[in-house]
Amino acid sequence: MATLLILVVAGYASLTGALWLAWQRLDEHPVEPGTGLSDTQPPFISVVIPVRNEAASLPALLADLNGQTYPHFEVIVADDASTDATLAIAQQAVSTVHFALHPIALTNDPTTRSPKKRAIGQSIALAQGMLIVTTDGDCRVGPQWLETIARFYQQTGAKLITGPVTFATVPGVFASLQTVEFASLIGTGAATGALGFPTMCNGANLCYEKRVFEAVGGFSGVDQIASGDDELLMHKIAARYPGSIRFLKNPAALVQTIPHRSLSAFYQQRKRWASKWRAYSSYGPTLLAVF
Image 1: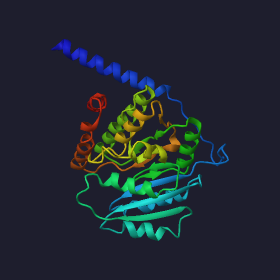
Image 2: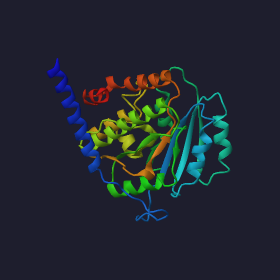
Image 3: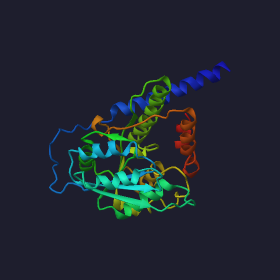
Image 4: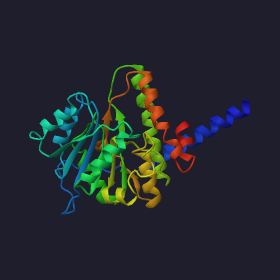
């Protein structure tokens, strides 16, 4: 028993150490405030925000987007049958923001297994941007968020860019534990990507070429899975375009969201995330997530 315990601890320490080294070797890509992009044709970005009952949080995100240093973007807010004022807030903001804002109302479809994938897919069909950037209605972003993504795309030519996500500071032990646990997931995804086998990412901060989304068939083949609008798509793109996945290690690209207030909500989210494991083509990502 003691020998087994030693082997488990040694294996855990070795893998964690390897992931930490991979993280340390990732280059950070700085962005100078207010400077233009080198290309005379900067990439036009379509920010896609699937929402449902986000009336309390959507105004703050729209205000963040209104303060972006990067002007070449539009925003599509895809409302999935909200029962609050979410859609009305987005519609009212059209005349007040400095960017092209397109609220769309999705029809309620109780047969849909993954409403979020449906919302993103319909939004991308309408998107004018060559780059698709996704986030969630309860997130906050900094003023250089889109500029940092656009610069990184020009520097790397990545087909899919995963970005950092963290929880906003909320008092309490449970919120702090969630922040640490979530950081381990984001860091692990970044590290495994740097090692050449991307495993994890988060749809709250994700960017990919529209033509690549279309080339891999979008969510076709995984649309029956409740979760996976991020990782399952990333795995499809990685299989079609090996070596094309990059993690954007820069504080300016950070997206913040709110931790769960209850253990039940936390459990339900992790249960949804685990539902996509059966769609993985290998056991590696599943084992790593459990680890």
